[in-house]
Length: 343
Image (cartoon, rainbow, N blue to C red; front, side, top):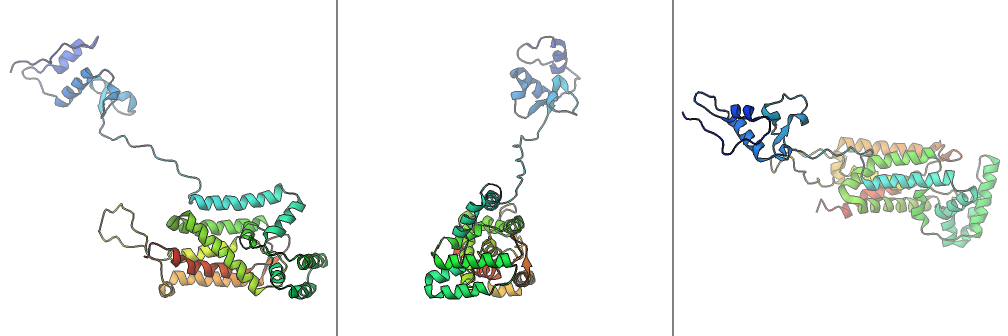
């Protein structure tokens, strides 16, 4: 068979003899089509790294150098993997936790005591202030209730003085039904609430987005404050803490997080994200053993918190279980009204 030669002379300096041996196919010579095609690309393109699908052995550690320093690589160039975030939570939940922690740190380390007390009076929810504002005749009942308080004499005296202040200036402050949730009594208090917020606020925020997440939390805080004022109208102890809003998010999450995961039935691509399942109805929740256990533990825990004093502030104080209950009820029954997946 006559020999064949590539069109055009070899222009690579110092390698004429090696290229002639590689690219001339004479009689009895073994054909090497892959090398032949790679050599043509090598001659056509001086910058070899710009050729898609080919890489030099300098860029491929651990590979043996082939002819002309060329290695075939069919691996696609994938985009670099994103970094794993530090907080694997929705941004609105992370912002909520940062807000609560930041406000408490501001009160602890920046504000003087007089400013902190003023902020507590103006932002905390005080049931006695609302009772006297709605019915001034209950001022005498408010003072009588403060006189029956027991405990440390200095603390009792301070509470009675504060009751006289509330009776003298019974201004209604409607914003306190929401702003009390931004204040906390101690670091233990704020950490306890933020942990539960991260656990149960995240699924609600992922399913419904930041606006409806905020709506459920706000409605729970307001409902918890209203129920607390109804059940303890003559109290002058300021109500603070985000527990009512967190309880609303817990109740909202309980409507769908305990549902068994859907079984893939073969419709559509397996990597496609399935549609969120509808909310569980109350009968379905009652038949769900995990949901019933969760609800039972939550109710028992709140009952114990209501009768046991916990050191959540400067002194041991009882937890406002009624505010928790009001927030839980609001989140449980409000979520179906704003749910779009079940429609």
